[in-house]
Image 1: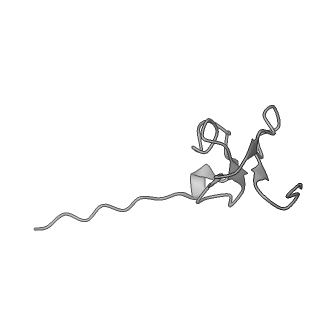
Image 2: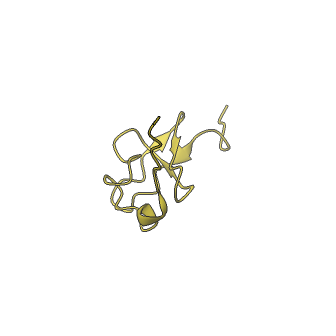
Image 3: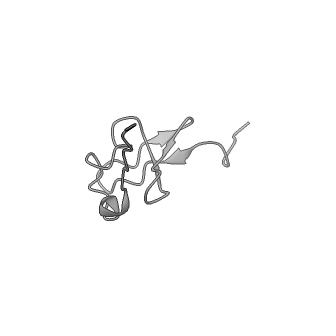
Length: 58
C-alpha cells in the first residue's frame, strides 16, 4: 500500500528529498528538509523581510 500524500519534497532545487517531517521556512513558507530549512541554506529570496526587533528595558 502506498501513501502518495504523505511527506513533502524539499523545495531546494538541488535536493528534492522526500521528507516526512519537513520544516517550513517562516519567511518564504516553502517546505525544506533538515539540511535546507534555514534561510542561509536555501538562499531564501525573502530573508531581507525577516526583521528582529530587540527592546531594551530602561
